Length: 301
Image 1 (tube, rainbow, N blue to C red):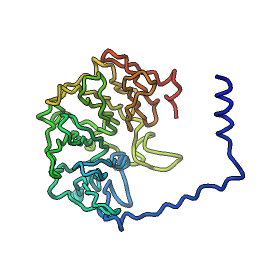
Image 2 (image 1 turned 60 degrees about the horizontal axis):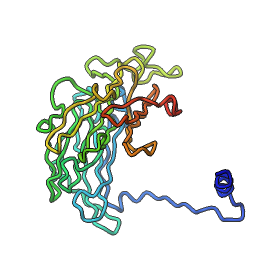
Image 3 (image 1 turned 180 degrees about the horizontal axis):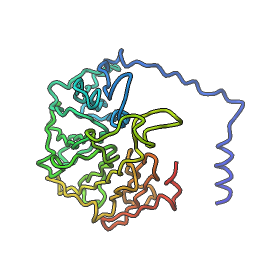
Image 4 (image 1 turned 120 degrees about the horizontal axis):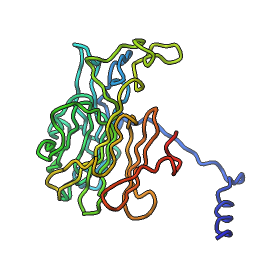
């Protein structure tokens, strides 16, 4: 055991006699056909935290042709203004040879608003990859119908589509109970109401190093994690409290990743948080989770 560790450490040392690898990154978005602008808040001025979080992107093969396609989540411009402009998320088909074609128009991805994050997975096991997009307001689940078409099945699937607004951010598909169907975890950011939001400098939570900036996240209530159990591809049932993954006012949830982080064969959930400790939900193998971020050393950035 000791010899193996010593060998590994020795192999990790930098070899001064070897040339450094050459890295050359170039922006080829225009050449590739990725030309539509990404919209999120004012271009020169952003008054609210809603305009600051930006958008997610998904790289996945939506038509099973063996080439990865791209979906860019889009938002709105100028929050709280009569000039607010809302845009749809953009779907690009990989044409091969390093080029993409915008196929949004006939895709069925019709939702507009303050889009945030995105995750993909085949929730109904029909062989086609579906899409879940988080929003400020209500998230949306798009079922892949094939042929480059998607259908909004949020309400039909039992996911929240009306009622109080949530600020969804990161999300992940995972089979947390290993029944063969992908469940869904969604992080929510802060409790925010644009009608009551203060302007930069309105209170101590709206300044930074003497500058007047957008308010938050301090001063706002936290979001709420949400776990939805997949009912064999037909619908989802919220199991947040039962599973023990709600985090209420203690955290401002942003990014989410799911993986078997301890090699026990069960998927865990990591939630990266803003200005508050991050969360590592360990899968207890019985439909529940325990936050072990502090003891595993991943709670603080």
